[in-house]
Amino acid sequence: MGERYRQLSLEERCKIAELHQAGHSLHQIAAALDRSASSVCRELKRNRGVQVGYKPAYAQQQAAARRWKGSRLDRNAELRDLVLDRLKHGWSPEQIAGWLVRGKAATRISHESIYRFIYAQIRRTNDGSWRHYLPRAKYKRGRRRRPDRSPASLIKGRVSIALRPAQVELRQTFGHWEADLMLFATPRQAILVSQERKSRALVSAKQPGKAALPAAQRLLAWFEAIDPQMRLSITFDNGTEFAQHLLLVDQLGIQTFFCDPHSPLAKGNNRERHRPPAPVLAPQHQHQRYRRRVPQRLHRRLQQHSSKMPWLPDPSPSISCSTVALQM
Image 1: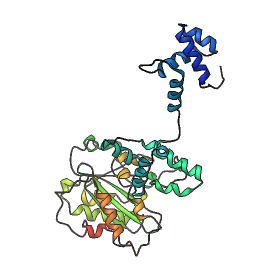
Image 2 (image 1 turned 120 degrees about the vertical axis):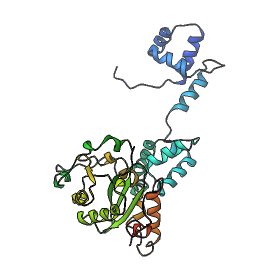
Image 3 (image 1 turned 180 degrees about the horizontal axis):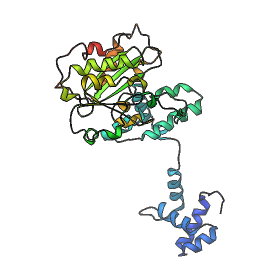
Image 4 (image 1 turned 180 degrees about the vertical axis):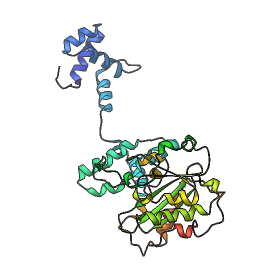
């Protein structure tokens, strides 16, 4: 008890084969090897051939083949190149794993294996650039320490998401929206995004920063052009950029709801959907060079997998692609 387990050697396997062939019981074989009977039983079951029975050399090969020899991405160059290519295009490990499953690929891998591979490369090569393959480009896994005070205390008239009607969560009716503000490392790069839960319809526009009043004015401009039956409610996280939400309530009669503190993913749509476009606006990009291409790429990625909005009016300055594109 307490000793580290030792793998069976080839000599021990030869002894097992000899005693087993002679008709000895499991307990007798175990006593001869100073091993437990369960180890002998497991060895005879796992490493025997279907036609040849238990042979020491074959059993040794089977045991060696099952031992870990590095991650699958280390051993499978084709899969590694595919995963790294998708990561370069801004996909998250979760998206890659789900894409392989949906596509019924012959070779699949879990998102956890991808994360482990990337962080293992950082440790082995001492090269921090590997982290840029990941959406958040973090050196270490884990969450940052949360501050004691939540911004929720600064939002007046805040209504908890727990009071949101159940039909909103089930996506049964149109008119229920979610909004989020995407911030980037470079100053004055902020994008306000709003998405309808049932249709997945999406609108987005550049914002001057994280100020609350411009965000509320932008939402007012979007929703004033929509039929009142298609703007019933909107859900936010607890960022202070949505502190002026009462303007939507007073002027348009839209119900506003907020996630619980430190739980922005409760909205369901925006946070995970809008995380992938972040690498498009990486701080190393030259703004003059990407003035036209980056906004178009960003909007295409935000709009990907979203349905059309048949109940919206003709494109207007508030929701047209020209204003959705960033002015860099």
